[in-house]
Image (cartoon, rainbow, N blue to C red; front, side, top):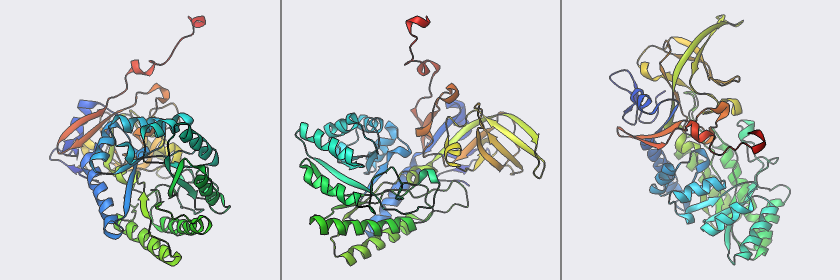
Length: 440
């Protein structure tokens, strides 16, 4: 499965963004996150165009939790998108990159006073409220600063997104937002309207991630319009904004086929228009927060193959071959967290016959398996392994587990490779550590 601008060059090497991955590995080392800049721009434009065609009154907020660096924030700004941030750190990175604060939205299910104050002082476009405690805190904070703050109220629509249990967010039993079924969402809106320092702009929901159909988005949209009708009936206030979150899936494997952007746009906006018309409500601005679907397939991670070992097992054919790489769960914890699956190939043997079923093993002191039972060309120590679709939730979830150094990140575009995140150094790893005098 070749993605984006990937191709096999005349040397039989995998090429991304016009750059030979073997050359990239030699220059920047491995593990290495490689991001296809042209593919991200193409994807953003296609997503936006699909909704421009059927519902022009819409805004796209890039969900920065999927992948955020200073360079990525600049790219998103250049493409004209808004962006959502979900922590003090994400907000700081966005602002340091010069991202327009009025085009930022702050998320989080337990925002600290520091986060709220930083967002208010920075002039973010709006804050998405998640609980009653937060409404009280933000109202008090805004009053103390003599400011008014635009807000959305996040609601849990109570739908089952049919995805991995750890990335479901829209069901009734969730830590996120206000429950619609028990009346909490409506109560939260009323509380905001009485606050005096918070300006109610609309409602928000997010149902889950890596969704491979548009049915859950359709169902959630219809439920949220029902909430809009309840708000108008109970308060007389029209809902200006309906944000339906993100969650569209990507191709981690060749047999995973998510809806096209046009399919998603038609499904969501048709449901929205029909429900709005039936309820006799004014059309809201439709907001979305795609993340994974904009960057996931634009990323590939390069590793160097080390030890190769064949061991006996009970299953046919009676042995398993482990191909060990120089990274693993510290640069990609998703297989351990979410049972994530991937496809890979030997980047330096991209034109060779796929003839060996192997298991790709990380080098951490754990049951660190990146990919079980995958077919690749005949491997040897020193080969370059490329794991596909690692643009989302890989770099941002990386850690120093086992004191590994977090990998570098390069953007590739039309044959040019630019380092956008340097590899960790050993000195950086201990820069914040201290030894008490009693241990000296």
